[in-house]
Length: 169
Ligand code: HEM
View (spheres, rainbow, N blue to C red):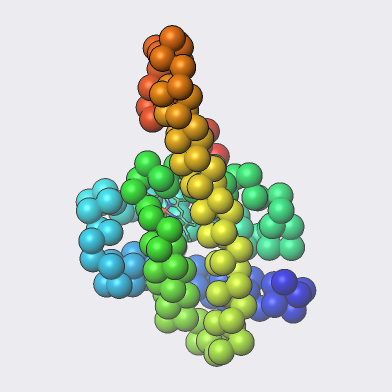
């Protein structure tokens, strides 16, 4: 991502988040309009989650010039999302919902900003999906080793019940 693109994203993010929770409100509205079945995965009261979501996004935007520093945390976040029921295809829905929400709050929104934001949000969801995939692969590996070594049964507990990655967000 070029310094110019990062500058444009930071400026538009500041506009979109001038009023707390407005962006998250718009995000969840677009998300549930696009895929109503996702609503049941979330708590009834979204207030707390909206704060967490905006804080996570702000952290990413602050670190856009060094996204590799956030890769592990984003992978952990993706692993947690497996437990919350997020499917790979939902990430694309979420990306488009976030772009639509930002677009509705930024007066200077245009095709260039949209392209930069799509790139930035893709850079968030790719490591999240990688984390989800690794988490799922490890669960499969645990089950497979349980199947081939019945003598070890019970030593480490059922693999599917391991705690999700440590929360950092
Ligand atoms: C742009 C991608 C996404 C980002 C940045 C993101 C970020 C977050 C954050 C920061 C939290 C709060 C974590 C915490 O409290 O520790 C969260 C929770 C959650 N997210 Fe996401 N998320 C994304 C995509 C998705 C998708 C695609 C789904 C699909 C269903 C989803 C479903 C959830 C659910 C169900 C929760 C937990 C609600 C609860 O507290 O019970 N997220 N997300």
